[in-house]
Length: 362
Image (cartoon, rainbow, N blue to C red):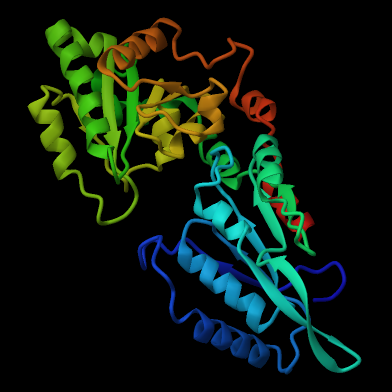
């Protein structure tokens, strides 16, 4: 790439749809050689000047691919992007990726020697917040490494996407709320559950349904004057709502509106609500970023939760109490009326210019 230009990029995405997270990618070496050959052909040259590989950090396969890139062609610059908001944890694929090392063979006067350039397979680590950088720096800086990983805070572009997508007028949201919460949308306090998947997910849905069913029974037909509830499934064709519908029916929570993913974007549904919740979805922090309070039904290592921004309601009483607290404060974010989503992101050390930072650090 010429000076100041963005180098060609190779993106290694989340591989969980192709294989299990802990499954070894046995064809990684062949895959890497094919990529290099293709890049050389596209650039009509045998020697590649500079390429950057950006990889997620959620699976063994991603580690295998990056490791083989560095072994086969160590001139590739490798960047690991930890795109979540969990505090740095040594028991994660991200930490395993950053502390995976190789020995690079170097040359001196045309002769090869193996004087150990012991180094990480990654050149850089991108994280979303200052506190995550601080923890990662302490965890992955290995004194024996000749080449240390550079750690940069870039932020999360999804916050920009949600901010842009939700800039609509009052009439627009009135129509959205009518679809979500019916004719009582003006008077009821609307609560949205973000669907998910995986271990503990249906238990989380059951907890939500039990609280909704209890409140519905308590207020009988007057429930819509006080609360109204909706549910949106996780993106993806395989995430149908048959199981959730059964849970709602059995818990007496038939008044939970199952939303169509094709009608409006998840960000729009969140903005049209007064509060949101999930088992532990990334939509929680995104909801807070646009000014809508959110709750996880499970404890997590997420910085929004550890800093007291994202509430926790892991049992019936705690969740029901939170519903009433949110209604009483009209869905106020932690910190009071002066605290909006942008202020919270700033206080958490999350940059507001993620795209510009990524371009700068390339």
